[in-house]
Structure formats: structure tokens, C-alpha cells
Image (tube, rainbow, N blue to C red; front, side):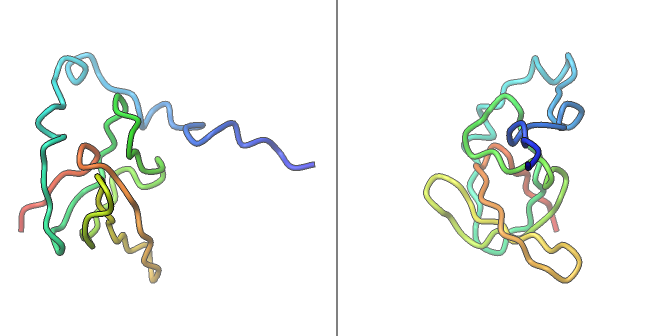
Length: 98
């Protein structure tokens, strides 16, 4: 038999926990972010928003926005020689200057 997976958020307690200071801050401004294709972004998962949340393995990775996909953005993330595509809501992305 195959072992049960226990869901997509299993094993992510440390990654998806906010401190008391972070819980006080509002995330409304991050909903309004807009990105252009070619922008560099960091994947920073906001645990209080479940819609458009990427898989927790990609927490902290950086990538390039390929373009919009519905209300979310398609982000190309390079892992070694592979390019993986993550679809994430703008609340889970932070723009990188440079």
C-alpha cells in the first residue's frame, strides 16, 4: 500500500507560521500588486490567504514573471538545470529591485 500524503500543507508548520508582529499587519496592499512579464519576484507565501497559494516547497525561491494567468501570475523558477512554473496570486509574491 501507498502511504497517505496528509494533504498539501503537511510538514509546513515552520514555513507557514507568522510571528505576533506579522499577524498585526494587513496584507491588503499586497493584493493590489501588479507585475509585468520579465519582472523578478520572490515567492513569499502569505499563510492567511489560501487562494492562489503555491506549494510550500517554493517558499523563498526567486523567479521571473512569465505573464498573468487569470487573477494569478505564472512565475518561472530555475532549480538547477530545470525550469519549473509556479502559478501564484500576487499576495504571495514580492517584487525584487534590480
